[in-house]
Length: 196
Image 1 (spheres, rainbow, N blue to C red):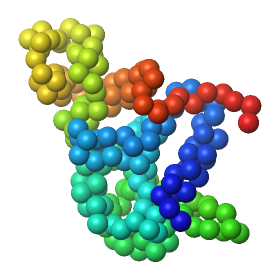
Image 2 (tube, one colour; image 1 turned 120 degrees about the vertical axis):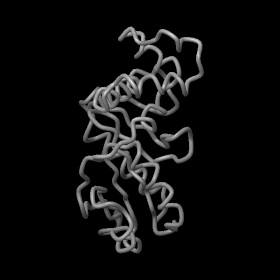
Image 3 (cartoon, rainbow, N blue to C red; image 1 turned 135 degrees about the vertical axis):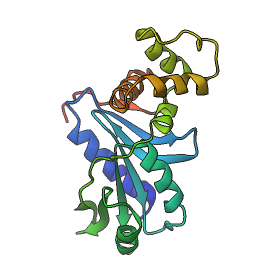
Image 4 (cartoon, rainbow, N blue to C red; image 1 turned 90 degrees about the vertical axis):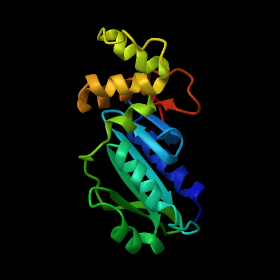
């Protein structure tokens, strides 16, 4: 069982689950904290839910570093892991993280929820706004007439103004909206109704 095998099953499941939901975006390899980590798959709708895949061929060496970054940015996190990793993952990740097991059943790869995820209570606003492109962050400020003094400034100062002026809930909403509004962004795909 490889990472790509689990990813295919996840994507197929999400495409089926969200096939009539045009407000959901599936993003493979979403970069967080200016590329310091990439979550394997993000589902963006009313939350930003990150899915980290740990196949039986993977190690858990990077999990601690990934955990630090995911905890700062993502509303929900689920680890989808091969059976051999489950006990270690349960001991290492926060109790609000979801855990799913990827295993073969009747020669078919299936994903079974072991523990549901809960909402992250400690998103870091400064890390969250780093998901915004400079022009997106500036447009949020302009909509609220908060852009004076930062229009020609670097993005980190624009992000800082957002964090100063908006509540965490406002930031969560705006970040999700801007990500979903991006056109032709990498391989991100809005779910479109389909006949299958």
